Length: 99
Image (cartoon, rainbow, N blue to C red; front, side, top):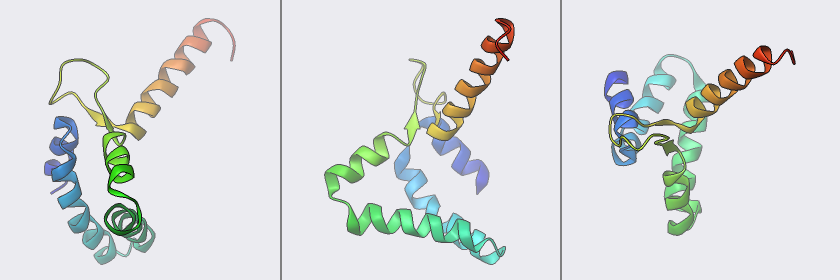
């Protein structure tokens, strides 16, 4: 299931990610990772019941980014994108002697 989730994120298909999040929450609960499960369920509850449909669409659109123009197969989660940016900044600052 994790492989399917990775491919869904890579393809930029939040619809598949949305379906898989429920199953992922159950897996976390079964493994004893209750905080991860609670966070996923809280996000899904907000997405479906608390936030307006317009704001829910904004959240969906900003969770998966495609920084290149290559399209499906080249997208990543926003958290992974930020980690890449931090890595690039550390390399740049180290090269300029600023660390």
